Amino acid sequence: MANRSKDDTLQFIRNAAKHNAWAVNPDTGFVETLAEGLTVNVNRYGYYLCPCRDGDGSRAEDKDIICPCVYAKKDVDEYGQCFCGLFLAPEKAEEDPSVSQIPERRFQG
Ligand code: SF4
Image 1: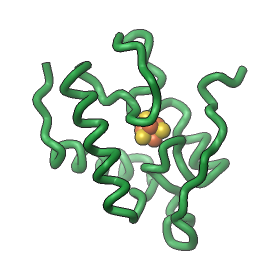
Image 2: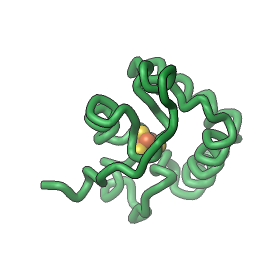
Image 3: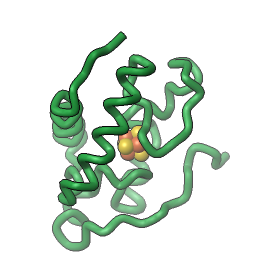
């Protein structure tokens, strides 16, 4: 089973943002909280289950909500943030980094 630290997860978050040309939410306290959730999940399940969704605990069932989830790109493009608000569109991060409750794309057809 994985044995990742919160610092490992913060590095993972920065890498994922860079890879996708997103910004990490500039609210560092908020990011730390999400990083703690992701770290608990990776150490519990072996994968970075989204920290603001309920997973099934099986990689096959949860594969769409392993961070960065398959919905993140559309959500960042449409709402300027991923469902959790961990990743933002770069322009939103600069202009208005506050995050909102956005629709859960997972259960939309
Ligand atoms: S909503 Fe954000 S934090 Fe959650 S899995 Fe998707 S990209 Fe990661």
